[in-house]
Length: 135
Image 1 (spheres, rainbow, N blue to C red):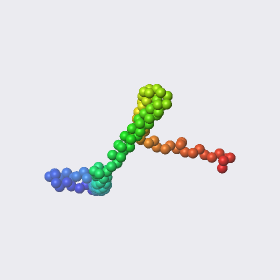
Image 2 (tube, rainbow, N blue to C red):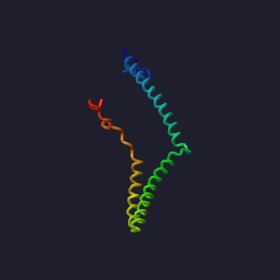
Image 3 (cartoon, rainbow, N blue to C red):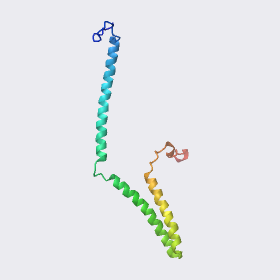
Image 4 (tube, helix red, strand yellow):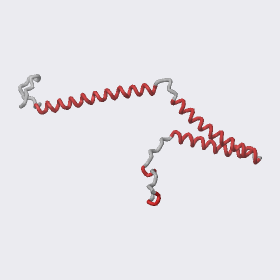
């Protein structure tokens, strides 16, 4: 059951059959559904992006202050310990210098630990099963 193509100006039958027409209609319906889903997704993502980039949120400032204070705390604690050791031992600049460097390393380590992504809990980290005698 071939249809004639009347728009081409020739009398040759069109290659499109009724089965092909229904298949094309099914693809058109799927395309329309996909376009509707994409439009909803774009609207949702635009709303989330607007909410996150809105001025007045203090999340970035809070994170920066947290990282800065962790670094400074490591340096200050190292310097205090070094000064305390020098005060009681009488070796004035050496303990301060050594523990200041140790405090600097500890501050950098704390900042890196805060910034690095947290590992997902593994199944092996679960509690070991109870022994028969413990039940």
